[in-house]
Each structure stands twice: as structure tokens, then as C-alpha cells.
Image (cartoon, rainbow, N blue to C red; front, side, top):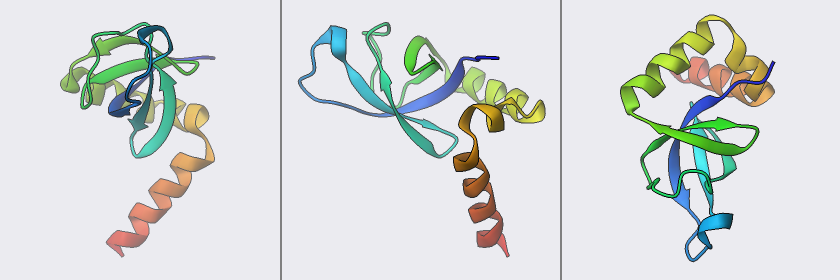
Length: 97
């Protein structure tokens, strides 16, 4: 199943044309390049829903956090982000120990 995953825009490539705008989005600590063409109004620190590498909608931080928690509860985030997320979680557990 493919899902739209919420993430935070942490950078936008300067000087890129609106149609080809690329940014880096953080998904619970995992950073990926994302096409921002469908959300021309997006700015750094905004939250977006990303589906197959394309930001399809902006959303507020509260909604993004709620959605991430729901996805974690049903374990869908692990399927979408795979081993990178699992390693991040192990690293966080090591930091607490």
C-alpha cells in the first residue's frame, strides 16, 4: 500500500524553477529529496504530505504529528521508510542508555 507521509521541509534548492522545485524533507529524522512542484507556496519549516517523492499538500504541524503517530501505531511508517527508520530508533535507544 502506498501512503502519503507527513514531513517537515528543511531546505529548498535555491534558484530552481517552480515546476522543478526540489527540497529536502525530514520524516521523523530521515531526510529525503522531494519534488515541491505541487505546493509552490511551501517554505522551509512548513509541513507537507509526500506521496511517491512528491509533496502533494501542505498541513499544519499538529496534523503532521498526529498523522505520524497514527502511522507508527499501525506500523506503516516502518514499511514506507524501512531500515533507515529502524536504525534511527536504535540510535535513539542507545542515546538513552
